[in-house]
Length: 134
Image (cartoon, rainbow, N blue to C red):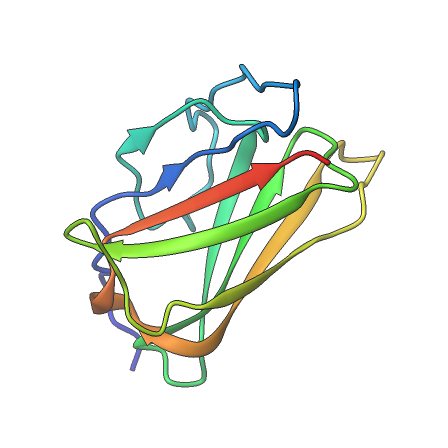
């Protein structure tokens, strides 16, 4: 049975530039569709995220992966996702992020961060994405 409420207090999206390049674009999360579980903090970011999809595991009380949609082309970059609960890193939140192929038709690029082991939705209240150019 799918829970009617996902317990997320917020999503933080942050990024850092490598070498001498710096990102200055920030997100305002306008126009996000209904699959967003929540957000509450913003920071300077290098990838303008226009959609965030939280995909449950077969046990729907656990998170399997998160797909961020970037409106900025970030080929050759690297991404990492962090999960925290009350400011502390969530145990078992290790993940691998893969930057997908740029879609010129939709002018978007997916960033899929898959957890090495599914994490309970109740075990985190913030999601952070860091994108670094290379």
